[in-house]
Length: 102
Image (cartoon, rainbow, N blue to C red; front, side, top):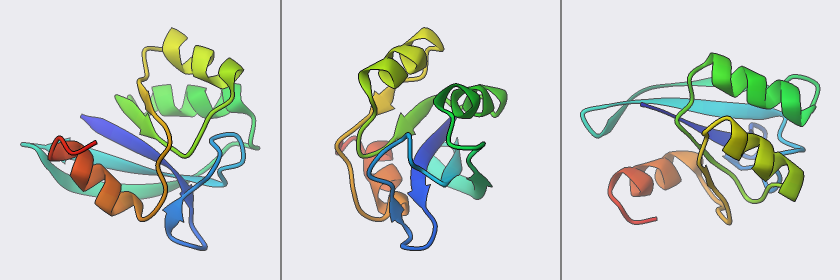
C-alpha cells in the first residue's frame, strides 16, 4: 500500500492545501508499517497533473490539510481516498493512520 502526504518540505509539515503543495511525501506500507518513504516535487501545482502523478505511483490514499471541491471530485474519480483536516509532521500522521487513530 502507498500513502501520499501533501508536504511542505521546508517546514517538514503536512501542507495546508493540496493545490499549493510543492512536494508530496510517498510512504510505502508493508505489514502495517512504513517500509520506505520518498519526497516528490509537485508537477507545476496543477491538480490534474498532480493527481496523475499520484496515480502513476499507485497511491492508495492521500493526507492533506484541505482540498477544493473540484480536486476532491477528481480524487474520488480516481479512487484515491483523501484524509483532510490534518496538520503536523507527516510521519506521525501516517503512523497514526496505520494504528487506526485517524
